Amino acid sequence: MKNYINIIKKNQLFSGIEEKEIEAMLKCLNAKINLYDKNQYIYRFGENIYSVGLVLCGSVYLVKDDFLGNQTILSEAGVGQIFGETYACVPAETLEVSIITAEASEVMFLDIQRIMNVCSSACVFHTRLIRNLLSVLAEKNLSLTRKIMHMSQRTTREKLLSYLSAEAQKNCSTVLEIPFNRQQLADYLAVDRSAMSNELCKLRDDGILSFNKNCFKLNE
Image (cartoon, rainbow, N blue to C red; front, side, top):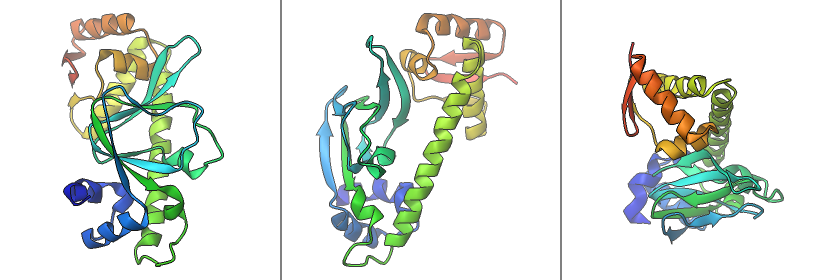
């Protein structure tokens, strides 16, 4: 665990908690690390989960598969980010998504019940940990709201501009690097990849933006 302490302490879940306290809390939270290959399922649709996952290396996607096998990326968790916290907080609810690795990854799992209930050893910073978890849940809710906002746009062009403009505003820069390749971006916005690629070329030809792979520049 000590090899990853710099990654762990930067996660919002441990905000305001000293490094020495984090090491003690990881034991209290029954932390375990698992290794995964690329495109390996961590959790599948219909499962119950009881732990929060924290990505130590690599990245994972929360995806939705329909009956015909079409896959939509709902969100991504990279190094230092957590996933699965919403369902883990309501263990009676089965997963309505699947969680899969985008690349070879290492994930640390934390027992959610040990976060939500004050432990017998009465960790000094346990109350802060609970507050941090609530903040994470609130931010994830906002992220989902933003995704719905992008997807609610009428055309592929409007969806692209909505997403890229929001990313530019978030990064306070007209130059940005997004965490998706073309297929993943199409899945995220729930549009056809070919139609999206054509629209990107039109936006470039219209002088609205330029791009190279997953790097974009919005022209002012």
